[in-house]
Amino acid sequence: MSTTSSAVTLERRSRLLWLVVLAVLVAAPFIGLYPVFMMKALCFAIFACAFNLLLGFTGLLSFGHAAFMGSAAYATGWLVRSAGWSPELGVVAGTVIAALIGLLVGLIAIRRQGIYFAMITLAMAQMVYFVCLQAPFTGGEDGLQGVPRGHLLGFIPLANDVAMYFVVLAVFVAVYLGVIRIVHSPYGQVLKAIRENEPRAVSLGYDVDKYKLLAFVLSTAIAGLAGALKTLVLGFATLSDVHWSLSGEVVLMTLLGGMGTFAGPVLGSFTIIGLQNFLADRVGSWVTVIIGAIFVVCVVAFRRGFVGELLAWQQRRRKEA
Image (cartoon, rainbow, N blue to C red; front, side, top):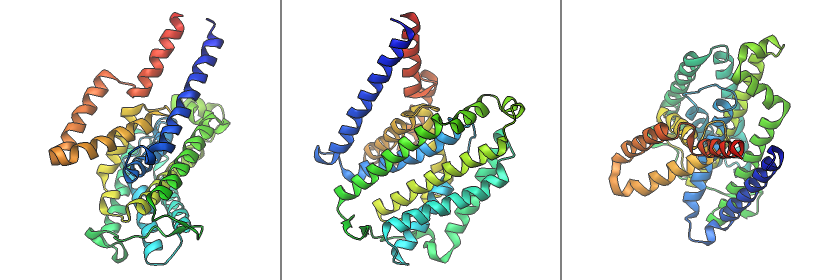
């Protein structure tokens, strides 16, 4: 079999697989899957896709991405609950606020590389955490409780879990396709060139800092969108949404599923959220230890992540054929 025909066959199979996955997601509320769990997993899948855009396709490791998800969660929760905004306006406002915070952090951190960039993002995230802890409108340690879902566009009742689920699913599909479009665009190709060899990208005349800053802002905006949706789904925003441990979880999701792949972060987020929900009632606080052990095993056995190892295996088969 020729390389071209093999690639076409692989692309057709991947499209068929995604159609099957989409069909399962559409049917999820009707086949016994708990809608709130599925919505939470989809929100974290959006969050992981945002982080993967930054780490997997640009090569920038952020240790403070929870700050953008959490700030949008608090902003949306306060605007919807206290200011009486509609849910769609609250989500848009939360996304914009996360993007603006991302722009501010990016302007400070983007000229640094490696561990220095990561540490600056972590330090800025801790500042956001302190603001959320001390500000009077955030509820302090109690967080924002009782955030209503309201009516989308004034007539779609989001209090219905099924209706809310399909809204979250539609946003997830849009974000997923949007990330694919960004990566496959000329801009995305430059990002991958920067990831692979930044000095060479500079020598070709690209303003590397501007490209990385835009990628950082896009990533923070998508992370904010995930946090805003999560607040509407669960009805609250708490300090755990801006805690540094959540930044670690999204790193875990991305690496576990496969950094630099499209499906990897989605699979990783569903795996981690599923394990947390399944083990929480059975082992209590030991769930973190068990997930950590699973992560260590997967890193040792599957260094590219689940999806990355699968793609590598398919490439080896194509070369042998």
